[in-house]
Length: 358
Image (cartoon, rainbow, N blue to C red; front, side, top):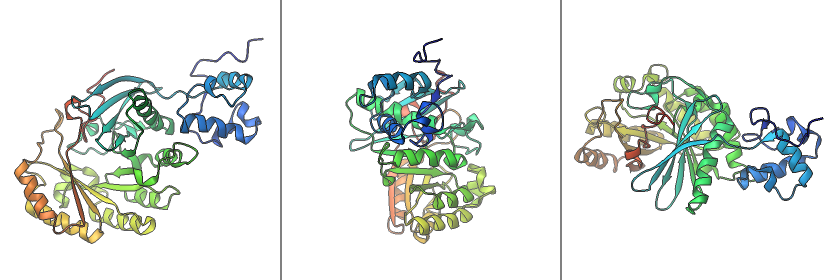
């Protein structure tokens, strides 16, 4: 008989990354062992980032061999990583099991380290200024594929002695709320105190405005911060920039945001990408301020990050200043963000596997 402790190929073993401790007990030898064994494995995997059964010292050697023969813990592999010249961003290209690639970005700010997570391969929503949208529809990422991105960044931070991961933003490739079930599954493991252990205040999910899913997220069992990508103050402009506005006009999305804020007691954020000559007039600023004041939302202004697939330009500095001066006295809270990683096409709106073939 073949030795049962010899590992099968990775494709034949049961992947555990992306599963809760209870889900780990659904197949294989863990199903017949006491529940605390799967909790031990989950603790090693999520809390300590250990992907080798051989290093799980509180399990017997025989058990480690049995588990290694049946299960895999490995995240999706990193194909390439690129650092920005100022070291304030690192972009990772990951290879998925079906041969597709995704990008994720570490934003290395002076006081915190944030990962920008992808939730889909490509995107179906066609935002005209976004490089990911130019890829067209792809598919949803699994919980494992979402968490693999965190594992890549955590391993990099440890190897570089750069500290720990502070924040997670679902602002990478794809529309997170179109992949709501898997995003919620990933959020549970991120927030589990016996898992990765990130507090909900450190996690933000961004959306183009899918009304039913915003309400479903509010009703879910995971608290999280919500950011709404608005980027226009009239239906005409927003529909031209973001075709989703035809199905979910932004004023309908505002009602869903009210529901989310009332249910969760969490203030949402309006994200607004400033495009030269498109949405950056003082009239736009006045309307945006009125929206924010009415909703009691924060405003996050984003300077547009140009790329070869779209014709837009960032608003000039003088117009940004005038826009800000109009907003500040009127809106509850306003920040201006210059994205990091432009030189490696890793900034907001620039992610696309067309840049990096791996």
